[in-house]
Amino acid sequence: MEEQIAQLAAQVATTNTMFAETYYFLSIPLMMIIHAGFLAYEMGATRLKNTLSSGIKNLLAFAFTIITFYFFGWWFYWALPTGFTGSEGYMAISGIEYANAIAFPWGDSAQYMGPNIADNASGVFWGAFALFAATTASIMSGALIERVQTVGFVICAIVLGSFAWVVAAAWGWHADGWLVTEWGVHDFGAAGLVHAVAGFFALGVLINLGPRVGKFNADGSANHLAGHNMPLTVVGLMLIIVGFFGFLMACIILPGEAWSWAGTGTTIYGTRMTLSALAFGIVMAVSGGIVGAWIFTRDPFWMMSGALAGIISVASGLDIYFPSQILIISMLAGVILKPCADFVESMGIDDAVGAVTVHGTIGIFGVLMLGVMASGYPALDAYAPEGTATISFVGQLVGSVVFILLGIVPGYIVSAILKACGMLRVPDAVQEKGLDVVKVPAQAYPEGMNSPASEDV
Amino acid sequence: MFGFSFDSWADVTGAMYIGVGHEATWTAIAVICCIAALVLGGKSEQDHYNKHQ
Image 1: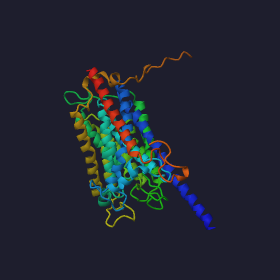
Image 2: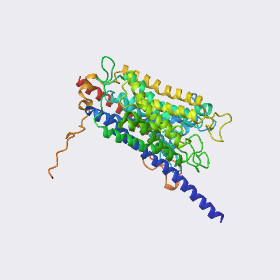
Image 3: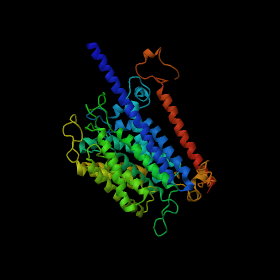
Image 4: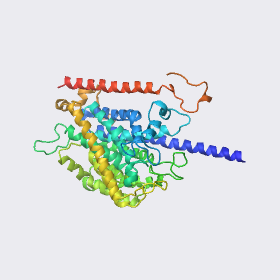
């Protein structure tokens, strides 16, 4: 009897481990859909003469971010939760020593960075985080289209995707993160540490990059440089929404494993949550954002951007918001979206797809709204060290300031260096001619856009 | 560097990839490849800009 129970327990453990591994593994291709969306969205929002070069830039952002996240980004996440000192935190899953033991692709830690018969977790966790990193870098990509040099942009993407947001995640998205333990920061779905960091990083780059040729007139007024394919852009945005389900499902820690927090599903902070919470929240947020943006714009581009903004506006608290609250907040995000984008443009910033607003401004709006709505919630679960902060508006405000700085400062610095090296901006003469004809050995639409009329009538 | 590092699959209890113990060498080569790709890509890009100005 005891032997049978032991066999059964072993089978249950194996099944649980395989389920957890499969769960995170499947979140990865779902997140790849985000990149299919970014690719379509960005190319559609580009004028015809630059279509393929925008696609190339987008693909390289993904590729180099994944690669560098493997080489060093993963290490930063585990090394820095308690700050730049790299000391070990209360949970003993952070600090330079810990990161050296699990997150380098060489030495003893390499066993956790490749095929290992005794490790079903590291690869799928790394894969999900690598896709978070690639998503963060791709957020910046659209803002810079039609005038950023490819390699200069790739360097910006590496700094953002494998360093800047990783530091934000270590500080605010880790049970040992100092923003969590000391300030009670709660950002379940990464509104601040992914979206705001990426949006403000893009702003830092845009300041040095300058506008596209022809964007602004001599009197400072702006021209609308419409992309060549609105349907492609809108479908791309919808694909990003689809991919968000993968992004957010990967934010849950499943129960029953050695690395789990409790007997239930939890957030990355160990606080209780369910997939059902996400099911309620995501679709309500998408709907609220669409409706909010439709009220004043009636423009499908801004309506789908509103859907994205809707999710981002509630992402910090998708684990605990009531759906009606989500509807109100996401609708508000949709309403303020276009005026915020207009304000950015009025400051002489040429953000081609509104990334600074959708991700930066709305990301911060979302982090702060949770401070208003959820004050008093424990930031960590029962195992937390005594004196751990609770969620508060002040804590969310501190987190917001940190996220903004982690975005705009490295974005500005790296782009200033690239500018000084002549590696940031495409020469104006090349912009006027078109980037595709200058540097892409392929043609976007070799047969044009007009199909012949049917003779079968 | 290459091939099976064990006597049999029964001996495999942890890392089982090709080149166990030589990870640093493989990683260094991979890093160099990426840096070379960026350098060559950057040079090609600048050449195209210069040609069309």
